[in-house]
Length: 354
Image (tube, rainbow, N blue to C red; front, side):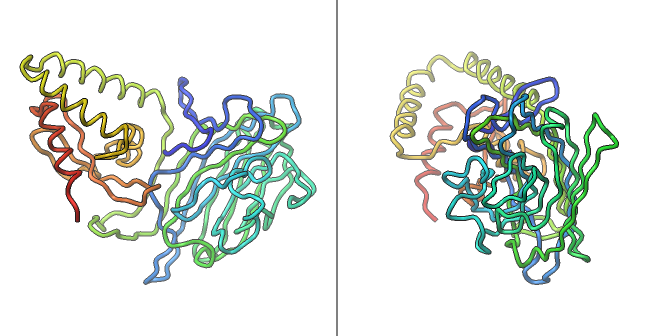
């Protein structure tokens, strides 16, 4: 997952994503799956079937609600719009409210009525390229504040029907549903990003994503990838495991440094300082955070593994914001590569031009 704006993971016994943990007004957060998803094929014109299930909490904390949380599909280049807090739900602003060039499909849980574009009630809606819901159903956000909401979204490529159902764990008898017929080929590009956005406005409310699963039927083969498997995604939100991995890596680095030959230290330290200085002033290779690399490689998944050398594994990664495929090297605990060799390798690679 890639987190933007105020969105952060929140460590607990199960792991959740909280879009605005601190009670600030007019805040925006997004959580986006790291890779693009095929929606239709340009050559075949074939549409995908997809289903997604997520659980969320919108907690008004006893105050008047304001504003809401969305699940959305958008072009891979989509970014948080300036001034998109409040009723713009982190997706729109005064410039982009209703236009085919928006290329957006949005499922919104909107807890506040903005009379300029909203229906006259708090609502759950389906939006197409617009801040105005194409269809909606009334929803009492205050009555369900703090409750876990189960939501199911599905798209049938034959009927071109986008369907939404939701219910509440605490009240099994309280359910809702909504559907809208739309040809996604007329709205979205072939490959899209999928994720969630949430925003607060003049009042604060908490927006929490507890779990998320997504699956798609369309088999679109990217260049250099195996075409034997259908595209399928299952996202599990479990922060404690990520923390454990970070701690383990830190321990490995500490052991590695302790076992190095003392004679290597001065030369390596000078080289390391030189490369660090280059990174800080923007010269040489670009620095990426560990979380960026985890997202790019799907947590260093085995199916992303390109090969293994004497110093560790190399994985295929995709930096969605840069729209760039990359190779990510992860040095193993038993690596025979010292820091000096590693720095030399980085400098040589960064000087290459295609």
